[in-house]
Amino acid sequence: MTSVLTEREFAAVLFDNDGTLTDSTEAVNRSWSMWARELGLDPARLRGYHGVPAAAIVNELVPPEGRAKALSRIEEIEQADTDGVIALPGALSALQAVGSLGAIVTSATQPLASARLAAAGLPTPGVMVTADDITHGKPDPQPFLRGAEAMGVSPSQCLVVEDAPSGVAAARAAGCAVLAVVSTTAEEDLDADLIVPDLSHVGFTVMGDRIRVSVR
Image 1: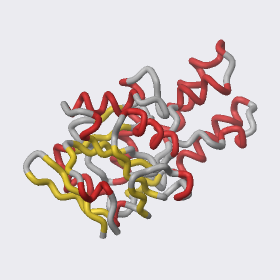
Image 2: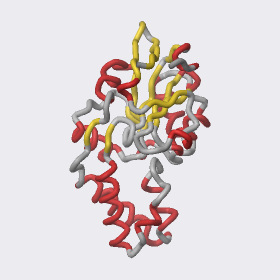
Image 3: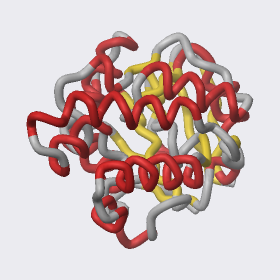
Image 4: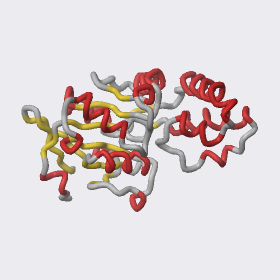
């Protein structure tokens, strides 16, 4: 398989975490369902929010006077439940291959992202942009703009690896190239430059200060 991505070199790879590096679906569903029931909300109202920061979800579903408490509660529930969180195929190899040229850009908070990476047995890269570092989450481009800035490179020189439409949209808006995996979203719903089943289908090769991508 060929793609425009395989013909390019990148200065950095910005990985999403949940659904891209780690499979946290069961933990996420349990946590948010518990949270919704505690607030008297129908868990079905949570559909379509994958990849969106918790604060943005809370702001849409909870009246202003209850938002601070509701956000604190979902953070508490999620950090306490990492049962079943595992690394997705190819995730560890990808992180190891890119080394210091890789970063994580996630909609989770720093404590939650760290907890899930640890539960999955994945290393935490030197650069990690979380919900704590931004004012506007995905699909806004700010997370990936921050990621590029933290890596000291232009967004146009970054490859974003995502699984969610909101993340792909954020990467596109930031001016990054996009590689998508179909772990949580159907291929037809991902507007990416290259789409693969998971990261085991992709190889990353570092040459000096640049990264090349190949498809296995």
